Length: 246
Ligand SMILES: [Zn+2]
Ligand SMILES: [Zn+2]
Image (cartoon, rainbow, N blue to C red):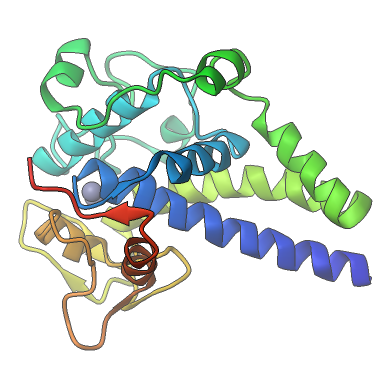
């Protein structure tokens, strides 16, 4: 029983770290709101690879797709609008073609991408060669830390996280019924909760759509964005900085 409790605690901590990495290293960075030193980048890419957030040349592709999501929000040109695609289409990651979610053309990438490819040794020899094997490494880490209970929880947590993250980032943040504020049409982004801890501040998605170049997603006195405070901490430690706007 003890082992299960520690395993769950470990899974929750890992989940939080993953969300902070996604929110800062992927999302806020692609908007040019923050940049990180190479060591922080390497650790972040490792964490992303562990939970299968990896495909070849993902930085230019993902950034182009997301910039288009802002530019054409909830129109037919938005690559991840829940008003044009179903949840089952979103999680069908093998169907990558025109007419499916996530798809962007090479021309779109040329035009909109904001992050460069990674070209170091670990990219070419590990991530590119074994793009989906991170989950086994994560399971092994949980096994070493917490035994068989940990391995089971680590493995299941990864799948849960993949589906939950997809649901939250592409579906809930534009369609969640329990929104507490909304932006003006045609943008349908919503703030799903004023205290941004569980999703590292991504809860305040309508705020982010209103001011995508703000490092902080908390815009009103009662809102809290933990991702912003992590960013401030990393900047104070010298691991990150706010770049000059492009
Ligand atoms: Zn959005
Ligand atoms: Zn964004």
